Image 1: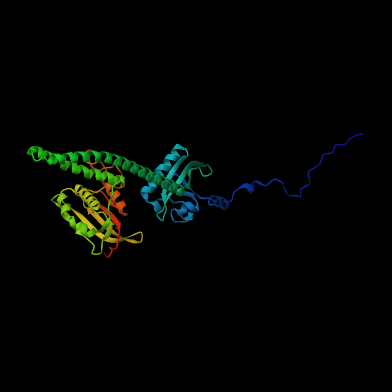
Image 2 (image 1 turned 30 degrees about the vertical axis):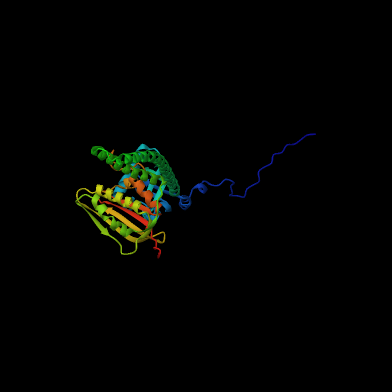
Length: 391
């Protein structure tokens, strides 16, 4: 049997039709391109060598507080100022000349409203052959939220490390203090026995008095170490802060240089708190001594009290301020850190303000400092206000 093979013919097309689209179908209209460039969360612009905007999308224009149309053909100088524009232009021309893409992983910009944005930015140089010009494509990806999370995580890590450091300092201080306490009690007891001898020669008696006096001073240091470790027994009673400051005025004046004036500005409102008078006296004394050291020659130290709100509750505020040399912001953030001292080597071990902070915290209070170079410092203490009992 003879087999006949046939070939199927494609279906006929209507006259004038085609299965392939014409070339003009793939030419992107400007409106479509603009829609694409504005559809995401990227800030996009194109500049020429002179820094003029050839293109800018809505998001990028919003940083300047204007519409894209207002930016076209202009530079950013009118919006950001000449110094900032010249710096950008210098950076962009370097990329043009290198003919190489540049990536900026931590690029910051401030918008018209004053908000700071963190961008992951790429700048890509290219040639517009149709118009014979060099252009720079700039794409910003806003990573502000990511940066904030990273900053908060870093801050939490620093706070944890600081808490661990203080815990270690407290542990070591407590152990040292207990060991030293045992030795100092033996020395003091032995010195008192010797002192009670009626036949003790005068020169020996005088030397022994020095031993007793020095041992008692050492006991004060031990009590401070125990306080730092949180292992001391601190008895709290109702105190009138204003009265405490007035009662100790002679003490404050005795430690000040002659040309330094101590000025009281005390509120007439009740300033009762629950506290330990001895420990608070040490706190104020230390802050006054610091103020004294910060003043060159003549100066003034102010002791102010007032009633303020602390977490929606009344608090007694004590401010110790001076017109001394002050501190820069970096130093001010470190002064409560254990072992940090602004004094020359051998003149401070850095525990003073750590102890001050420790006492304030144990009074359920808080302490802050404001300072700037050549403008003095102010230490602000706040303690919960109480109403004394009738009895």
